[in-house]
Structure formats: structure tokens, C-alpha cells
Image: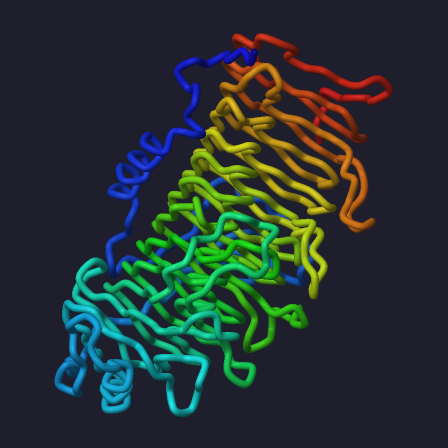
Amino acid sequence: MKKSVRNSRRGLANSWGVALGLVVLLTSCIVEEPDKQVESNETGKPAQSERGDWQVPGLVDRSGKPIKVPTPGRTTGRTLDVTHFGADPDPDSKDDAAAIRKALDAAEPGDEVLLPAGMYDLRTTDPADESANIVLRSGVDLRGEGRERTVLLTSFDGEDDSRVIRGSGVHDVIIADFTITSRYKGPLGDDPENGDAGGGPMFGIYLGANEGKASSRILVENLGIRRFKRHGISVKASREVTLRGNSVSEATAVGPGGQGYGIAIEGSADQHDPNAANDSRHNIVIGNTFDGRHLRHAILLQFPTHNNLVAENTITGSILDAIDLHGEGEYLNEVRDNTVVGGQKAGIALGNSGGAKNKHDASGPGNWVHSNELIGNRQGILVILGTPDTLIEDNRITAGDDSRVGIEVRNAPGTKIHGNYITGGTDKFSAIRLIKDRGADGRGKGIPSGIRIKGNVIRQAANGIRIDAGKNLCIRENVFDGIEGDELRVAGGIEVSKSCP
């Protein structure tokens, strides 16, 4: 029988009543004011990178100076009511998408298109783009009268690249205060190996580049996104996009190939130049909530996207890693002050072994993971497959009965683990563990090297620090209190120094 060191935490990873209650409580405290610009946290940043003159993680310019990410100003022009263009807010009416498009076409930069409370049936696609119900215009906002009061109901059902709302190369747009969902009535996604499940649109909102020019200065706020197949909100090859106070849930599929992502921030697989007009950077994912029971990943960063901020989000459960830097060179991103409860895999992971078209392996250098609250996940934080120079500090990790490791480091050269607080777990749990990386079909194989474990507090945990593999390791000034098993366990033949450079 399992022995729990911390009985008060028993069952937390599986207790949805407790977890969902925590989501509500935390969400009420973290949503930013609508007109507030977000700055990067400035304390203790690492400064190691090999990406040209970009050296410092988070919301900074090339010199490392903190920046404010601009958001669009409030409407200065007219408010165009879609019901005046023929939209019917009653359920199961004729197509309303055409009327919304007419209102957008009539708008000028500085205007907003208003969706009064009701349900809008989106049955047709844009004449110039059969993949989208609604196409955004630069300078024109799209706003409802509340997340629970205004609903867009799409008829898309599994069509390739289908998008309820698309913006390509657009700028200065606010999208706010409504819900996007679909007519799909089938089961929700729960099998990460099933690539053929699901329906509804592929994307709820898709923001991308046009002819190599990024979308920018966009605010997506207070939306509900559910019953989609691939991404709830997708931001591709774009910058200065702020996603704030949204709620994402109920993906219809969570299989391989990009299904079931709540929010995805992506660069381009073939674009590694930070000088490019479609370089992905300075995007903010803040104060959003995710019911992860039907999400493969809640928040995902992929390809060489950099200097983004993922902060103050609340995730309850996730089928795979909840916050995932997906193993395609993502670098200098800041992940802070998020709460992840009860994930089936890692709360936060850097590096990924998957990928069919684009083979995943290491995330890029210099990512900063700090001040997160991770409760009852299988692993709190996981770094693998050659991901270099990650700083993991000041996180609070509480293990549940199904947790295995607080912080697990495999092949991850130069990882620094500083000042974290780790507690709980059953007899198989280790607070910090270094282990050999078997790689992914040979990619990223290796052992931990150049790892610094300093100033962590491990209290009332089953086991402390376990070193199964590694070289050039330093462990010092950690605090152990009430450890039932081994405080420090080092496999034979491994040298550990107490003198960290």
C-alpha cells in the first residue's frame, strides 16, 4: 500500500471538485485590467543565449531592456451593430455570418463591430476564403456583450484548416467578450493516440502572417473557446499579440499532429531570423483559464518563437504536459506565476519527443521558469532532449499520490535549479531527480551535465534529491526537513561538487 508523507494533500491530483474550486478562486485574482500593458518580471533573469544579440528572457528588446507590449487603443469611431446588417441573435436562425461580414466591410479603422447578446449561427464562409467564417480587418474591433451572453456557433465539422475567425497580417484589433463553439455533438477528446477523432472547426481563432508580414498589436480578451479540434487560439508567425482572461476547454480531439491545444504560440519551422518581418516574439498569454480534461496541452510554444511571456494562467488537469515548450528551438521565453493542478504528465515541460512532419527534440536556450504553483502533476517540471541553459527558480511544487518527480532533468546542459520549494508525495516520489535521457529515435540522447542545484527547500517529502546520471554537477545549500526516505542519493561513480561557479 502506498504511504503518503503528506496526508492533507492526499487525492488532490484526482479531486476535481477541489481543483475546479481553486481555478475559480485564482481566476478572480489574476485577470488584468483591460487597458493594462504587461511588463516582464525583472528579477534574477538569466543572461545566456546564442541567438545573436537577444540575450535576456521575457519581454525585453534586443539590448535586454524591458518593454511594454502595445495593445490596441479603445474604439474612437462608430459602433456598428450586426443586427442592423441582418444578423438575428435568436438560436437556430438563418446564417448570421454574412451579416457580420457586411458589418466588418462597412467599418473603418477605429470602428467596432458589436455582437449584441444572443446566439449567432455561422453557416457560411467568407467569399474570398472558404476556410473561415469571419475574416478580421486591421483597425476594426469585434466585440460581444459578454462571454456568456454572446455566442458564435459555427457549422464547421472537421474541414481542413477551418477557422471560425481568421486574421492574417492584421494589426490594431480587439476581439473580446463572446464565446466560440460548434454544433459538434460527439464525444470530447480523451485519447492522445487517436488521430481520427473529433469534429468542429480546426481553429477557434487563427492569427497569422500575410505575405511574410506578421499580425501585431492584437488583444484577444474574455473569450470562451470550446468544441474545436486543433487549437482554441492559434498565433502563428506574429508578435505583440496579447491573450488575456480567456477560457478554453472541450477539445474534440487530442491526438498526434497538433490536436487539442488550448493556446498555441508558434514561429515558423523554416524561419530562424529574428530580423524577419514574421519573427514570432513579444506575445503574452496571461490570466487565462483552462479545463484540461480534454486538452492535449493547455499552452504550447513551438518553433523558434522567443521572448514571450506566459504568466498567471490557471490550468486544471491536462492529458499531456500542460505548459509545453514543444522541442523546436523555442528560446528566451518567460513562464511565471502559473498554477497547474492535477496534470497527467508534467505541469511544465521543455523539449518534446514527438512530431511526424517536424521531428521534435530540444527547446532552445535561456528559457526562464519561475514562481509557478504546481500541484499534483505527475512531474512538476521536466527538461529533456538537450534543452540548454534553463533557469528553474522559486517554483512551489506540491506532489500528490500519483506524482513521481518534482523537477526532473535529463539531457539538459546548463540547467540551474535554484530556490524551489518542494513538498509531498508517496514513497516513490523524488523532489529533484537527474536521470539519463534515452532520446527520441536517437535525438537528444545523453546525460545531465553542468547542472546546478542550489538553495532549494525540500520539506515533508518522500525523498529529496536523487542523482542517477550526470557529470559536472554541483549541489549545495539545499534544505531538507522531514524527509522520510533519502535526503540525497547519488549513484555509484558520479561525482558531485559543493563548489558552484
